[in-house]
Length: 452
Image 1 (tube, rainbow, N blue to C red):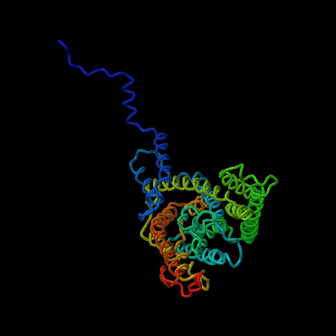
Image 2: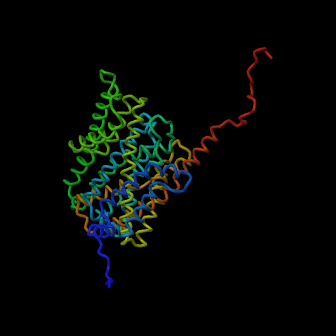
Image 3: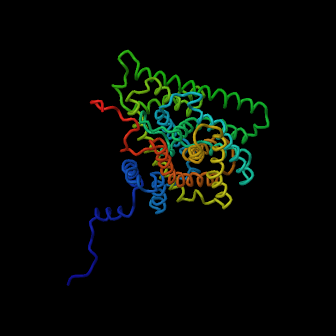
């Protein structure tokens, strides 16, 4: 008789069956990266008619993927502090190159008056008010409150792409878009001295004259001048090689990859001479653009820079969503959330409106300039940089508040920015249109050829 027994499965089949239950993290990473690339390529077209942005979608994707538990990797910035600093640094400098290449307007005191107002008035007011909220409302130490204020100062050049100028030469540069683009290009560097001030406070140097002298002379004076000079020199040299060299310029022999080369060289040169690399990259882009303002190669450089920026930005946002899923906001209290709401809805808008008092733009444009101060990747960089270079103690609550503000900004500004700017553009077009119907006869018709 035949005895009943379980069939013997081949060893190879058993191995395959066992492997199907285990997911290789590397393969899952490749799958996720491919999904992000598809989002970067296709989602902007599909989201045009929806109250969503690519940034919101990527954060939601990160939350969904990391909530499943399939990935053992925890992208919490508190754990990966050095990697967070370096990755956000790379994304910001690539974004700054793209922002500099976008701007068609020639730099000048009057033509850039909106920019100077936002930088000289709105940014310091935002830092001071946010630091005060951190100190009095959240109970932060003076050093951590200063770091909190400095991290909330920049209008993020990465997440603000939807409110920035269009590509070079496109003409999509109204006062609101120009102001936000130029502000984002410069305040990432101009907020840096306040991060160093926070680091100095953490070391107890605010009470010493030597510490304050070093901060003012080196961290403010030299680093700003060195960054400005390094960026201008690198930009002028690359501009000459691209457009003015003996053989008519090398722009026809190269491609958009030059934008990445210019970004890395300008940043590295500035850092070598102890200047602010963020400032150098933006100034470098402006100098390249100014060498031959109407050349088509600017468009090619911008497009390449924009693609790299969007890819890295989306990857960061997926990781940010993963950090949210793994408890980045776990220590957030109701007080913290109220402070975060105040930073987004009160501090920046009020500081922006104060800065724009007496400025030429209509009140609607001033209101948008004040409201659309998007917080994002630059804030993460400053927090990571400060914590890696200073002794601030337990930073878990600081990360929670900053993470909440960034999430709030991604949602609120992401949903409202495009409709608000579209409405402003329609109103501007209506004001510029003639009062009579398009098919009406002109008031003084030209005489006919027959003299009638």
